[in-house]
Image (cartoon, rainbow, N blue to C red; front, side, top):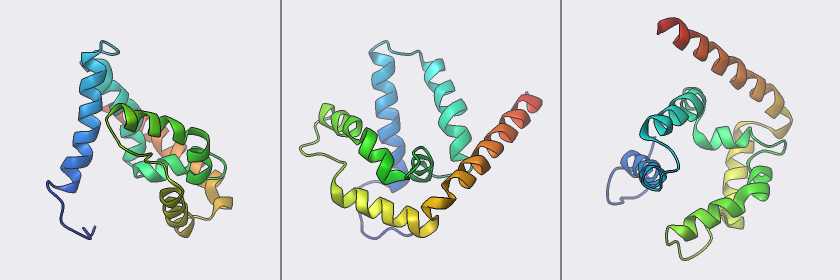
Length: 134
């Protein structure tokens, strides 16, 4: 991994901080309990993230990849960002083009179904291993 420019705080801490901040809000607002939030991350994202990064995971969640996904659901991320005080949309044509370019360079769109099956098989195996190890 390469950091292209300095920024206050470590990148990993900043990303974890964004997730934790939202988790704290969900708990504070009574949407979920701490245990349920932990389970949601562990049993949902955690299983995917053992094999894929979050952007790769989103890329597999729509037939046309990440640009398709953001075309369908990007408004939600803009709304969440506004709720947190963002002065402008976060899902811009430029970020969509950057993400789609990176994802398609790594995996052509016609290979998405095969990669989805690959992800799902690994998540099932990881669940089985976790259940066995309990």
